[in-house]
Length: 214
Ligand SMILES: Nc1ncnc2c1ncn2[C@@H]1O[C@H](COP(=O)(O)OP(=O)(O)O)[C@@H](O)[C@H]1O
Ligand SMILES: Cc1cn([C@H]2C[C@H](O)[C@@H](COP(=O)(O)OP(=O)(O)O)O2)c(=O)[nH]c1=O
Figure 1 (cartoon, rainbow, N blue to C red):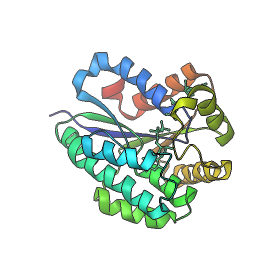
Figure 2 (cartoon, protein in one colour; figure 1 turned 30 degrees about the vertical axis):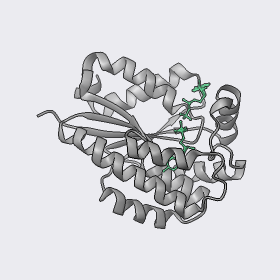
Figure 3 (cartoon, rainbow, N blue to C red; figure 1 turned 45 degrees about the horizontal axis):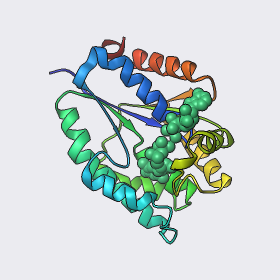
Figure 4 (cartoon, rainbow, N blue to C red; figure 1 turned 180 degrees about the horizontal axis):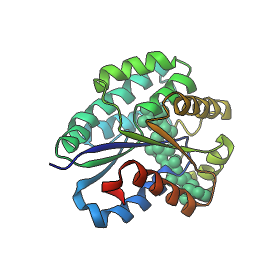
C-alpha cells in the first residue's frame, strides 16, 4: 500500500491558510486524485461541526476558557477517529487546516490557560498522533487581522473578535513551537504576495515528500 502522510497547516487568523490550501488542492488533485484528503478543524463531520457551531457563536460570550479548550479537543478527537485515522490507514495524504498546535497557541497562550496543560489534554484526545509535517504560515497579527476585517468582515467569529494582545500571544506561541520543533514545523512567510506563498509551500512539500509532490 502507498505511504500515508498527515500534514497540518497552522497560523494566526488571516495568514491565508485556507486560500493556500485551496490552491494546493487544485494543483495536486490532478496527480493524487482521491488519495488526497483535505479537511479542517474544528469540523469535518456532523458531531465536530455541531461542536464548532457552539464554539464560534459570537453570542456565547460566557464560555469559560477551559470549556473552550475541551470543546476544541472533543471536536478534534471525533475528527481524528472518523476522518483522519481511517484515511491514514488507507494510505492517503491528509491535509488538515489546523490541529493541536492551534489549541496550544490559542487556548494555551491566547487564553492563558497554559501551553503545557493544553498539550497534555490534547495528548489524551489524540493518543499522541503527531503530524508528519506542519506548515506554519507566519503573519504579523496586525496584518492578519486587517485582512480578515477587509475581506471577510461577514465571517468574523468569536476568536477573531479578541484583542490584538490575544493575537500577539498566539503568534508568539506558534513561533516558539517552530523553534522547539524545527524537524516537524516549517515556517512559510505569509506576509508576501499570495502566489509567492503558494510557491514556497509547494517547495516545502516537494522537499519533504518528493515521491508524492514533485
Ligand atoms: N498573501 C496574501 N496577500 C494578501 N491577501 C491575502 C493573502 N493570502 C490570503 N489573503 C486574503 O486574506 C483573507 C484571509 O485569508 P484566509 O485564507 O481566509 O486566511 P486564514 O484561513 O489563514 O484565516 C482572504 O480574504 C484572502 O483572500
Ligand atoms: C483548531 C482550533 C482553532 N481555533 C481557532 C482559530 C480560529 O480563530 C478559529 C477557526 O476559525 P476558522 O473560521 O476556521 O478560521 P481560520 O480560517 O483562521 O482557520 O478557531 C482555536 O482557538 N483552537 C483550536 O484548537
